[in-house]
Length: 263
Image (cartoon, rainbow, N blue to C red; front, side, top):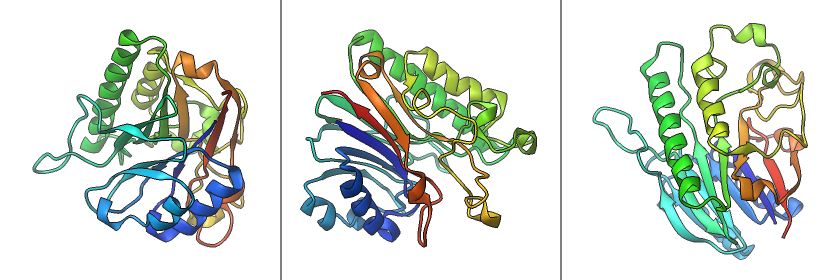
């Protein structure tokens, strides 16, 4: 079984690339982030023709997440217990959706950006991550052998090697001690980074800004991850980052991350 995660930065702009990616890599389950589409705006026809069922979560033109599966899709969940709200007035954001696919509970997560140190959005991000940790920890306490994949754009580079030059990020979000602590707390709750053992750094990234040829100069960040429960970690046979998908005209600023699981 092959699962992947990808921040596509607008599904309607990149549906052709998504369909080609699914076929090229024979992806069974794809978690998608930053779809920027309401549920009724999704370009489903091509995906369905390829044999994929799709669970979407999109309330407006912002954020948006989805799970596409060709191995079954059931028990769809929009958001997780305790997930904080944002805005005035407070409202749910389209940042988390899950579906059970061939026995694996696959979550597509689009963690809040945080914007800037000291910004209220950073506090929201930390509360969001803490709620995810508490809920995900409870799942394993209830069912230790559960197969769970927490996938998506985490908007955190948890190690210095996960950015092209840590000295340039000393006053930035994504690498601040509280954000990194929140990420590592989820790891301590029982969820392992399934990709890093197969794609070690440095200079291994999943995101490159469009600004000043960052991709061409490999000045990127590793902020997209697939974290797995202990039962899922045992099944991993390999992992990769499809860096080539970031190249070319019309590419997303993120590359897909892929994990292979033994049957």
